[in-house]
Image 1: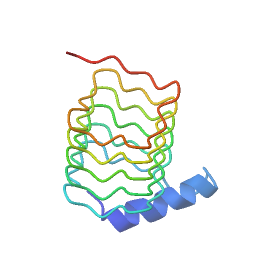
Image 2 (image 1 turned 90 degrees about the vertical axis):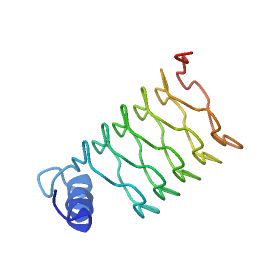
Image 3 (image 1 turned 30 degrees about the vertical axis):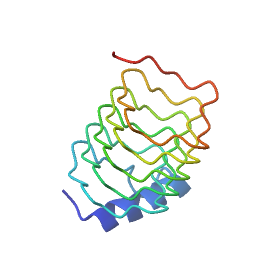
Image 4 (image 1 turned 180 degrees about the vertical axis):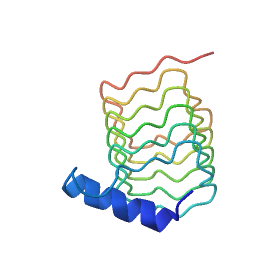
Length: 130
């Protein structure tokens, strides 16, 4: 996998002009303990990524694909997860304080022990597996 800084820089260019840069494809990436504080991952592919204990506080994950991502113990405080695909994501013990989950797909997501204090869950889609 390319260096994470390079992927983020190319994604930033892509967000400014889709004919430049490259949309971030971090599918299946090992980002365990990664520092992604305030990263702009708008529309990024993080499907099945290992984001355990990652710092995603203040990150922009608008419409990001986090299907089946492992976000156990991740810090998502103040993150923008509007319309993100969190279908079957593992958010066990994640910090989602003040996160914006408006319109996010949480079907089958594991939210056991997650801190949702102050989170925006307006019209979020959630159907628990159990």
